[in-house]
Length: 260
Picture 1 (spheres, rainbow, N blue to C red):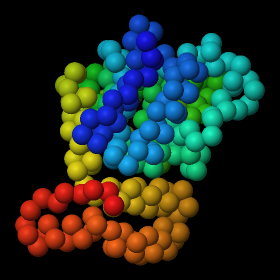
Picture 2: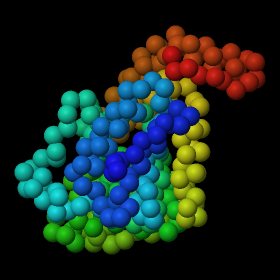
Picture 3: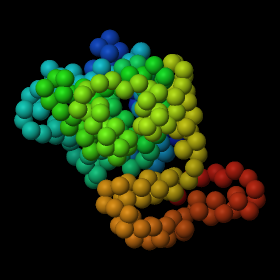
């Protein structure tokens, strides 16, 4: 049975972490499978949004550390085949170019939190327990937490959890903006899917351009992003979807976008 499942539904690619008997502990095989399946989302024009979730009571207990010792000792991540997407999104040239929504529950440690930081919208069950606990294991986070957590929740808040390895409750994650919505346990997937479907109903070219612009601002700064606003809008204005958007506005109806 595959440790990463995929299913397309209403223009949304459902990507499931499926190793519940091991609390979804993340091994090397899962890393490679996730990288491969993110390409499906990135490259398939019929897919407009992704939803990352996990099977079972917990999102993940973290890295299957015994399997990662040699990798970390080598000083590099596993080499991804040509065309695969970087699950952590640290390599911008290999980052999936479509939105990712994430649903989490139970324990969400180390790699789970770093995967979450690479997604765009997050829904958590109110029983979720987040932990960036690498310092308790003699190492430190290398999947993006040291870069993104301060951006997401502020320097002091990030250091509070990165340097102690303490758990963060779902309520605290929501208060600091790390999580966008909380649900009762068991309802997080349905709510995340509803959000993903709403995203998928919008104009794909506009959604992807919005994502690129926001990421460009975050990585290269506001000035660079501002310089690309109108130049990147210009080709979209000639698209069928842009014409449909205007026409639907004039006719006071819901637009039907094709992604072209």
